[in-house]
Amino acid sequence: MTRVLLAALLLAVAGCSQTPTATTVAARQVAARHAAAIEANRRGEAYVRHGELENAARSYREALRLSQSLEDPEGIAANAISLSIVRQRQGRLSDARASLAVIDEYAVLAQPNLRFAPLRLAEAELRHALLDLDERRFSTAENHVSSAARHCGERCPLSAAIHNVRAQLALEAGRLEAAAASAGAARDASRAASDNAELANALRLLGIAALRSGDAGAARASLEQALALDRELGAPRKIALDLLALGRAAALSGDREAARAYYARALAVSEADRDSTGVAHARALLDAVDKAAATGK
Amino acid sequence: MSEKQAAAPRRFRGIRKQVSLFLLTAVAGFAGVIGLVAYKQGMFVKHTYIHFYARDASGINKGMSVRLYGVPVGAVKELELSERGAVKVQLGINSDYLPHLPRGSQARLVREGVVGAASIQLITGPAGMNRVPVSEDEEIKYIPHRTMTEMVDEVRQQMTPAFEELRKAAAELGNPDGDFRRSVAATRDTLEQLPETTRELRQLLKDTDRTMVALSRQTEAVSRQAEVTLATFARLGAQTEQQLPVLAGKLATTLDSLNATALQVRETTRVNGEALRELLNQAPEVVRGGGELVRDSQELAAAARQTWFLRDFIEPSQMRTLPVDSFESFGKR
Image (cartoon, rainbow over all chains, first blue to last red; front, side, top):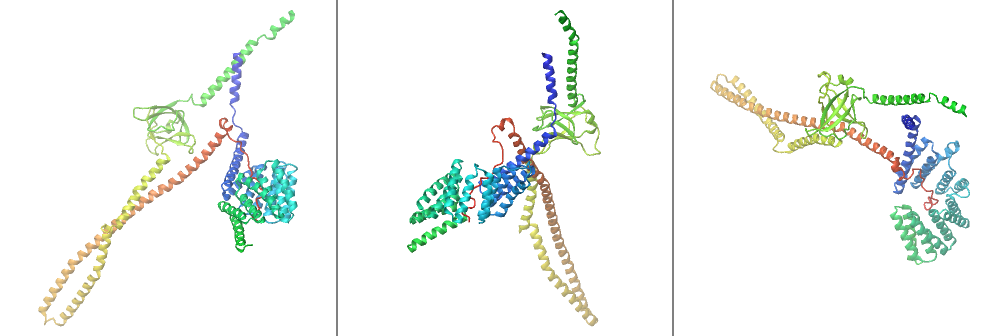
């Protein structure tokens, strides 16, 4: 028994005398590069949270570069999409498109070991649609939304967002019924997916569609729900949009004081958020209400 | 049945010898491995022991490598507190390298990078010194390593007298009773007196000329007057003789003062320049050290994150995408 144990000990000693192979060193280098990409990605996210968009863009660009150097499709898609969002928020739409083009180029190559997940492709298409919407290119936006829906399939986490973009396109075209239908579908999809951000967007769109149809009561009901959700989520720009729409609903029902109060709240929120567009919008509506009060109309 | 009993012992005949041989081979192999490891660790190498005393032995450990020109030549063998109020650090030096280690060599603690492995570096004296090798149990000098704070302190200490000198020089320049201002005032006085002297000299020459003309015309008639004129001439010469040394003395004093001031300014500039050069030489080292410190800390943090003790508490790393918001562009149009 002792001899067997001695032999086992000798084998164990021999087994311990391995040197690190080249494969493990290479794997460690790849892991280090991958970790650096994730680190840059996280930094970008933190900068976005603090409103430092230029720093966020720099971090996402670095993360994208590292992911490209590793041919990591997940990393490339995640960072390219995030970079496009940051660039759009900065108002640099051509840069936003350029970052999405990275995904398009890889997708065209269709290499078997460099395939993007369908959800990532759907996200990229939807981002294209949002950029087109920003530049009022409604027909190309429609095409991108259809493509996003194709990639997304029946049930995917982006369904609500796709319906909401469709509703916005219908609103722009003046098709109020189609807009309400799409917003309703978005509301149901977002409730099923417990996506409160898109649920608030859907409710806001339903409110705006009702407002344009002249139904102030229905508009107010939807918009108040949207406002409650947006306050929970802590989204200042959307809170201001809800308040402005609620002000319009109040004005439609003839309650000028309530409308003025909503516009003033929207102005305060936009000023605190340093949103110059929101401030200008709220100020214009406040002036219009004051002018109407002065002329007694 | 009886055949089976007879066959069994034949099959295992000699098995004891074979097993013993196998185990003997294994034991011999194990002993060989141990011997090889011991050889690699330098246990069969003859060592010469030398030592040094360090006021602060922080960073010096038993077994630490000792290097000469970057080559490992031994190890720290012993650390013990001595009665001299220091730590006696005994070094075991491979005797093969001893001829390269002359008396008067010094030791210091060095580190590869800021967080890298530390070792004792042996520094030999310049060529031409006494090249007799160190002997057993001989003491060598230890150069304490300087920390970054000490380096900064040293720079500050070197800079302080330079700035002090500069301040004094500036104060001297601004002091109305100082040598410089007085020298300037003296120079100005001298320059102010120069036109007057020149005018006097010119007047003197005119007078002389006039006298000479008068003399040539009235040689006979004014022989007495000639004596008076000569006397006047002699008086004027004496006056000139008296004034010139005074002027020359004033000028020399002024030049001496200016020379002293120039020397002082040159010395101050030289001291400041040396201090600044020292500071600029050390600045990249400090910056590089800071960079290495950050990089090493990041590597340490990354390594620590992957240890079994911490990795269970850390969220697995993966790429995140900012949420795609369908209202990203709404309200801007």
